[in-house]
Image (tube, rainbow, N blue to C red; front, top):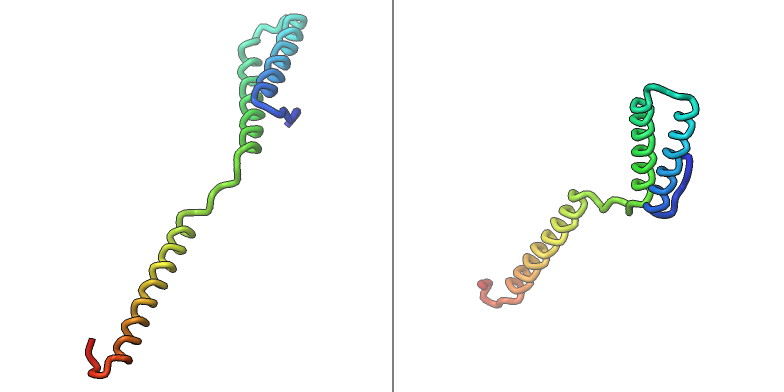
Amino acid sequence: MLFAPQTATAAADAATLALLEVLEVLEVLEVLEVLEVLEVLEVLVAAAASDWIDSELPPPSPPPQAQSMRAEQARASVVWDRRMIRLERAWDDPNGML
């Protein structure tokens, strides 16, 4: 990347200035295929903006599988606790019945 703007406005300003400079050069050279050159520049500016946006995004959240695994572990823990409570009650019941 040619520049590292601090804000989206700075990126847009830098891109605008770069396009204006290119247009001045094209006028001097009297290039007939200005539109083709502008299309290439548009792609380059879009790529630079995309790189900048990617660098500003927060890191991705954990995958859903990890969250569902934690939920499953919590559910299994509750089930285990309930079974242990039933076992303790059965042990304490003098008649062996609940």
